[in-house]
Amino acid sequence: MSTHDLVGLAERLLVPVYGRTPVGFVRGRGAWLEDADGNQVLDFFSSILCTNLGHCHPTVTAAIRRQAETLVHVSNLHYSEPQLRLAELLVANSFADRVFLCNSGAEANEAAIKLARRYGHASGGRYEILSMLGSFHGRTMATIAATGQEKVRRGFEPMLPGFRWVAFGDALAAEEALRPETVAILVEPVQGEGGVVVPPPGYLAELRQICDRNDLLLILDEVQTGCGRTGTLFAHEQMNVTPDVMTLAKSLGNGLPVGAMCASERVASALDTGAHGSTFGGNCVTNAAAVATLEVLLAPETLPRARVAATRLRAGLEALARRHESQIETVRGLGLLLGLVLRDGARAQAVAARALEAGLLLNLTAERVLRIAPPLIIGDEDLERGLGILEGALSS
Image 1 (tube, rainbow, N blue to C red):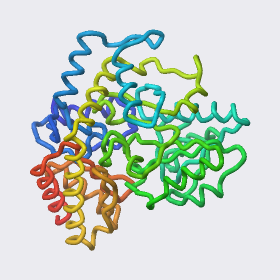
Image 2 (spheres, helix red, strand yellow; image 1 turned 180 degrees about the vertical axis):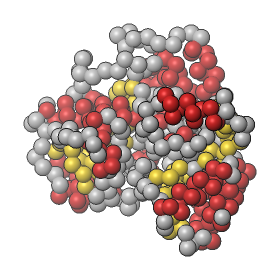
Image 3 (cartoon, rainbow, N blue to C red; image 1 turned 135 degrees about the vertical axis):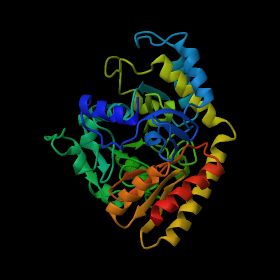
Image 4 (cartoon, one colour; image 1 turned 120 degrees about the vertical axis):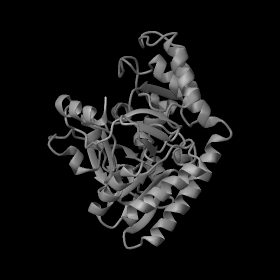
């Protein structure tokens, strides 16, 4: 089918909840996608940061094939090796002692919210969670209640009670907002959907101290920032902070739907048999993909290579910002999660559209921020090509 055919079918058949660009992709390899009309597109979006190792990474693809030929799924009333291998890798390479496996970031955050409430009920009946203005935590009723963006919640009122929002990056505001019923603080190390916003130095460490002083849980939503995206396996490693709970998804399966809630033993024990579950959580194929993904990320060369790419990309974007200072306000972000903040939202939208026409896929978030997140395996030539296309789009 052509792109025209795909667009026509989507308009006729699908619930129109996505703001789609008029392009349909049929295959991908590395940092490149091919659309239904045979056009090649350089991917600087990584499918909403889901393909950190690029499209169809050979190691991950081989793991998927092997597992699909062996066992696709088995109930969580039994045991399976891929699920346990994934849990073992996550525990061995993080602060966590226990892992709950699921299918998405929303599910992982939902599990974290339920865990926090169970923990709070066992320690005085506390239930409230503080999250941040500008945050995004998912599309379930609990996770939109936690999300600090009114546009996400609009039309779904009344919201699930037990959530309040404070300014991101302001630890004092969080401490002043505490109430006797507060049990946890939920925060992203870098706000992705909120506009690629990095908090000031020491912010997460201050939240950690606040949590310690008040017997609160620190929950880090690393759905976007995890799995090497910021230059370390998890973003909080760069901030010298240990959370009580961490959520992962998106790139954990390098394109397959898999999420995880990771927690310390002290906190995880609040969830006992029957307290939570997921029919397809821990699926054999998706977990085999996640194991392969983590093994590639943990290989000695992967993250250092990504850090070099991040340095080059940021330098290139900052050079663009100097040349186009009338259009660009700033460059911000961490690792290969970068935001080019334009001064005008309409102009930002036009730049993204022109870049796509020229063969570069970007994403516009927070109205005027071009979110730039190529795969971690991006090569120098592709980086320069992408920067060149972006330069042309800004100059048009």
